Length: 148
Image (tube, rainbow, N blue to C red; front, side, top):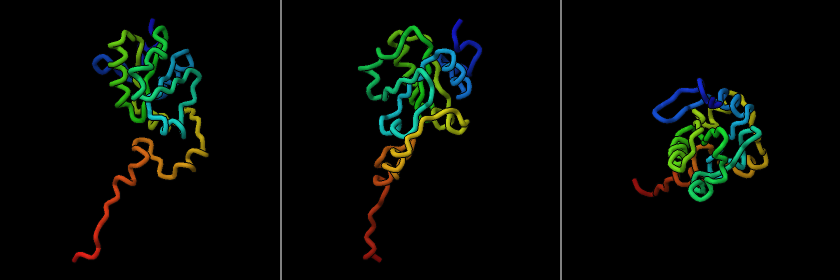
């Protein structure tokens, strides 16, 4: 019997777990693989026993670090990129996979355990969970005020 049996909502080939279901599964031995970018995990991470930090851009060359014989939950910021990671892992032979619906944003809203490094928060005053570091800068528009 799979740890994910009778849990979550299945959408096509993917089981989507709520954060509380994912937490329960983690307490029962599931691994949680956080595929967010490194700058996102520097500040806030999931506080679960079997956590693997593996940014999605490093997944193709490092996916073998994910146990294939254990239940695995893939997580990101919002639960969207993780679905692509699950499809990639299925192509590589992984079977016991689930998606964290809503990602760390919903996990945070549900007040589930987090490890927060406040020093990182202070070091990155323009930090956005779902946007790159330079998001604010890239959205600035220079305007010539001398024109009328």
